[in-house]
Amino acid sequence: MDVPPISPLIFYRDARAALDFLERAFGFETRMVVDDGQGGVIHSESVFEGHVVMVSGPPPAPKYASPLDLGGRRTGSIHVQLKDGIDALCERARAAGATIEREPADQPYGDRVFTCFDPEGHAWSFGQEVEALSAEEMAAATGRKIATSLDAH
Amino acid sequence: MPSPFTPVVFYRDPLAALKWLERTFGFETSMLVTDDEGRVGHAEMSFGDGRVGIGAEWGAEELIGPAHMRSPASLDGQGTQFIRVSLESGIDEHCARAEAAGARITQRPADQFYGARVYRALDLEGHVWNFDQDIAEIPIAEMEKASGLTIKTSL
Image (cartoon, rainbow over all chains, first blue to last red):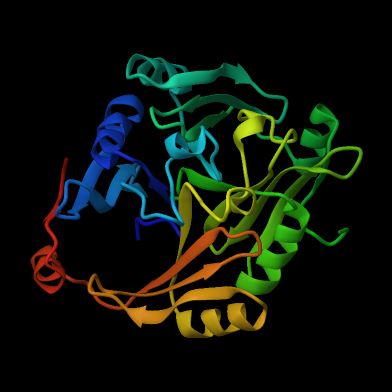
C-alpha cells in the first residue's frame, strides 16, 4: 500500500510542467500520467519515498483552480517530512525555480524547516527532525498551548 | 513506513472544523496548538495511518505566508487541491455516517473503472474530500480500454 491513507490532489494550469518541476526540484518521480486527450492531465501520480501525491490540470471550473487563477491564494499546502538532506534539498529546489519563502532553520518545536512556493504558487513545507520533543516540551519552547485531543474544547 | 506527506487545509473556523471532521468522518485530533487567546495556530488529525493538518486562514499559520491561505468559503467555494482518503473497508457505511452528520455528498459511492469504489463529500467550509476503497487490481491496458484514456507510466 503505497498510496498514503490521506493524500492531496493538487491542481495546476499546466500539470505536465508541474510534474517536471516536482521531479527536478524535489526529486519526486512521475509514475502515472492519465491524458485528458486535449493536452491536459486528468490524473497523475508523483512518488517520493514510495508515497504518492496526485497532480491534475487544467483544473475543472468552477470548483477547482490553480493559485495562479486566484491571485496566489490557496486552500491547502503540503508538508513533506524528510529523513535527511533538508539543506541540500532546499538548494536543489531553488536551482529548479522554487521560490524559497523561509530558508532552512531550526524551529523551537524540534524540526528544521524550509518553505517554498512552486511555479504556480502552491505552498510546500519541508521538515526534518532535529530533536524529538514531547508535546509538553514543545509547549514550553514555543509559548503555545499544545493539546493532544479536542477534549478541552 | 509512514508517508512523508501531510496535506494541510485551511479554515475560517479551524476549531469548528476539527469538531466537524471528528464527528462526520471519524478523524481524531492528535495535536492542537493554540495561543493565549485560544486561537488555533496549527492542528493535526489522524485517521488510521493517515495525517492531515488543519490551519487557520490568517495570521496564526506561521510557517507559510499568512495572507494567502484561504478557506473555500472565502473563495466562492473554489479550492486548489482536494484530499483523498483511502479506506480499507466500509466505504458505504462511512458515507452514510458522514451524510447523517451533515456532510454534503456530491458523488454517491460508485465503482470506478480504475478498480476503486469512490464517494465525494464537501465539508462545512467547502473543502472536497474524496474517499476511496480498492475493489480490484486493474491492469493499465484494461483501464485504457474501459475509459478511452491514454495512461503513461512516466513523464
